[in-house]
Each structure stands twice: as structure tokens, then as C-alpha cells.
Amino acid sequence: MTRLSLEVARIQNPAFGALLLWRFSIGYAAGAAGRGPAPQSLFLVLPILLHEETARFAIGTRTASGLRAFREKFTAARREDLLYAIHDRARELRPLTIAALQTAVHARLLVIDVSAEVLPVSQVMPRHKWAEEVRKLAAAAEKLGSWLAKVSLFETAAILGVRF
Image 1 (cartoon, one colour):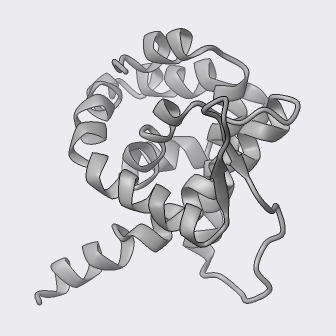
Image 2 (image 1 turned 120 degrees about the vertical axis):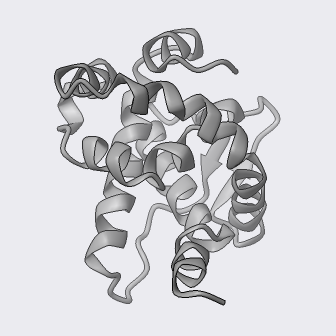
């Protein structure tokens, strides 16, 4: 396995994806009075956070700013192309997102309830230390969840230029 392939395998794996989906769901539930996200919204998490430039915008946007401020960063930086690529990356990363969701459910991090909401089972962070980049991405996942909790799926699609 080449060095690049090894690096991709370390980042794009179901266990790390499960962590990001879990933290996203925690952020969503906190912003939506305990409700969980619709499963469709989970397909945006990995395409945004596993892409270096879009993740940097997510990390650099304050939680209180919201999804529209996140989108405006792309416009201000004249990088709308990155924003429009989220939809294509979501399609490419669909199998990884599904595997990550399965991993999160099997690990009892998430549960899909009868109303088709994805709910975090626990909010307690593991005791072991994570690398700085992992902590940043986990915090960005929570932030993304809280942003999406404040808007409908229709608004999310319009703001980010994606289709569900």
C-alpha cells in the first residue's frame, strides 16, 4: 500500500466516520431540543469534514454563526466550487457513510428510532486522548449538527446546493 493510500485508509474508514456521525448527532440533538437528524442529513457530514478545505471552513466558523455563515465563507473566499462539489462527494462517499452509520449503530453510539430520527445513545466522550486533528473534526461535526438543527432539510439543500 502506498503512503497516500495508507493515509486515505486512516481517514476514510467506517470507525472514524462513525465518530463523526455520532458527534454530528449530538450537536443536532442539542440544537433541536433532543430531536435527532433525519438520516438524509448524515450523508453531508463526511463529504464536508473529510475534505480538507471544506473542513477548514467548518472548523473556522463559530457555532453561533450558523449554516448560512458557513456558506458565506465560500463566497467570500471565491471558492463556491468547493461548495458545489459537496453533492458529488456525498454521492462518492455514500458507501462509506452507510458503513459508518452501521458501525455507529453496532457500537451503540447511535440508534435509529421509529420516527426515522438518528439519536445519540450516549454523549460521553471516550477517556483516551485523541489527536488534535481528530478533536477539531469531532468539534466541527457537532457544530455542523447544531447548524442543521436550525434549518429544514429543504433549507439545507438550498444553502449547500445539494439534492437529497
